[in-house]
Structures are given as structure tokens and as C-alpha cells.
Image (cartoon, rainbow, N blue to C red; front, side, top):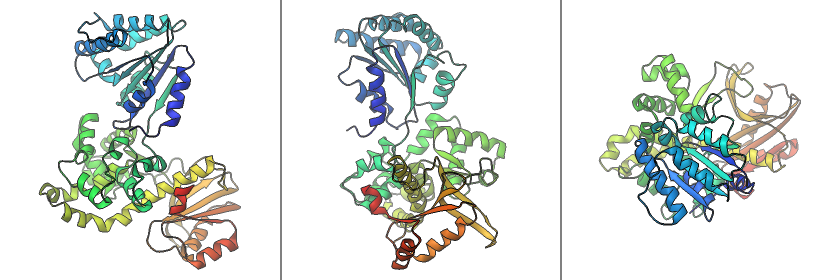
Length: 463
């Protein structure tokens, strides 16, 4: 089952139908669907697909040779080219006469084993690009390798690519395609639990409740997702133990660098290096209060929902889970789910505002949005605003998101109005997002003001 990636497929097909040499670089973290995208794209096209393996150069050359020769003859063979240059030049020569796709998946495995591969590709591209109809795709899960050895200015292949594509997890709307048989509320819960990574979404069983899915995936030592975060770190990082400690610290509330350092017992210089690597993987992200580019208030939050859920709840209950007591572990987790979903709902609301903007339905034409926190001098305490988006120096949007079973009352709107006065915008627009709707007092005040938009969660799914 292939879902989504319409824009990515359109980009690949546009390059394919140019009928001239094209060189596409595709990269992104593991499990995000890069291989599925490539396979969907090359269906019913003349293509050589080869996936590198974490082995030596000889093994990869033999596999590569088979992929080329079987594509040309349709017959399985044990024959092999004597070098990668000979194999690649054979493909380039074939592409002079007809359109041909060469997709090398997990390119870093091959390039690490065959040190001269990048230089060989550079030589052959320069030799054949003017009369070649080859569409070359290099794909890799090691984002640091792809960025440093393929995309970077000093890399041999720099300047040869005609396009690049970083594949990221699905947003909430796209993830909902996997949740068609669930209620609207359950769709948000499941997105909060597994995020938008296709391989994780496929682990959700639509014949089971959310509770049973949690038990079956996160609270079951035999499930594919039970050790997924730790296994992914082992594949990507040399010292997974400290990465585990850092992510656990962030998941349990230590969000500033000094707090993370204190929690894991390492210096801030050491922690900052590890945090930088987690940022590059898309597992965590750095946040500063909206409008403050460099700020000591910067915090780190977990970007990937599966990692956020796993590190928030699994380690604390590991001993119980290992003994097969999934019901007991779930009872310990369940009371914290509404609070956990608060940040998830904020992200869903931010995505919704982007959707409104792109469809021309947003009252504020912003170019970025974010969250703000800081001092409220009038109240003499810390304050927070879930969403701020600026159009210009005079116009901005302020938003509040509430994932509760109670309706939002007038007090929530009034608090947002007061906090917006901390900023010097002449024109202010307000958005309130609610899981369960709004009280009559809040609705009446919003109508009276005229610059307040009230959005129920179920309405967000219809737009």
C-alpha cells in the first residue's frame, strides 16, 4: 500500500520526462519511506534499482552487476563487472540511446566500501551528461553522510546534481490516511503516539482500539516498535547510551541545555555535540521564543512523536513491561495522556494554520509561526502563547490550543487578549482551537470582537 508523496512523485516525474541527464539526491532518516517512494516512481519504467549493503566493495559490486545485467537480459546471472567504473560506464552507454533510471539506494554503504565511487561518478557524469538520457538517483538514510559527502561544497559530486529531496515524515493530514477507520479523536491520539513515519504508521491495527494498539506496540517486548528508538540510535550513532540519556532527559522535562547536562551528568560542551547530532536526525528540535533568533531562553523538544511517546513512558515502565504486565503499564500511562496530547494538539493546530495560509483562507499572511514564552511585567510572572504568526510589524495572529474535554470559556480568550498586549501590533487576530468546543460566553464575545476565529477540532479535519 503506497500512500501520499504526491508532490515528491510529481517532482520525480517532471525530471524523468525532461529526457535529458538528471541527477536526483534523495535523503532522509530511516523508516521515512524513501525506498517505497523510489519503487513507486520506477514502476513500469526502464530502471535499474540497486540497494547497497553494509558489506565490502566486492559484495556490493557483485550485487550491483546482477541488478544491471538482469535488467538488460531479464535473466538471473552470476556474472560480474570487474569494477564499479566498468559497471557504471555500461549503464551510461545504455542511456545514450534510451531513457534509463539508475537508482542506488543506501548509497553511503556502497561509497564507504568503495572509496573511489564518488570520484568515478563525477568522472562519468562529466563525460556523458551532454548526450546521456540517464536519470541517476542516489538515496541514503545517513543524513550526515549525504549532506557531507554528496551535497556539500567540497564533495566530489557537488554541482552535478540537478535536484535534491529531503524526505520527512507525514504531517497530520497525511497520517490520517492510515487512520480512516478510527474516530476523529483517536486519529489525533495515534498521530501523537507514532507520528508521521510511514513504517511506524503501518504498525497500527485499525481493528484494535487505541488502548490495545498501545499495548500491542509499545508495551509488548515482542513488537516491532518496542525497541525501535534504541535500535535506530544504535544504527546511527556510535555511543547510543548517552543519546538515550539525553532524549530521556528532554522527554521528562529537562529542556534547557544546562538542565540536560545536569540530568545526564555530562558537561554542556559534551552534551551540545550529541544534541547537534540528534537535531540533524530530526529526532529533536531547538525552539526559541517567537521573534527571538538568538536567545538564552532556547529549549530542546522531541520532534518525532514516536520517540517522544516512547521515551516519556516506556523506560519508566520497562520492568513491568518485561514481565508481560501490559495492562498494569497502560493503567500507569493513561492518566498522563491528556497532558501529553497538549503539545501534539498544538502542532496539529500549527499545521492547520499553514494549510489555511496556503489555501488563501487565513486572515494573516504570515511567513513563519511559532510559540512564545517569557516574562509578563504586568502580572509579574512567566507567560506563554501557544501560537504567534507575524504578517508585518503592524499585524499578527495569536492562538491558544486546548485539548480538554471541557469547553473553552471566556477566561481563556481574555487571557490570550491580555498576553497579546505584550506585543506592539496594531492589528491583532485571534484563533482559539478546542477539542470540545466553546461556551456561549466565549462564542458571544468572539462575535462581538469580530477578529476572533473559533475552531473546533472536528472542523479542522473537514477543511
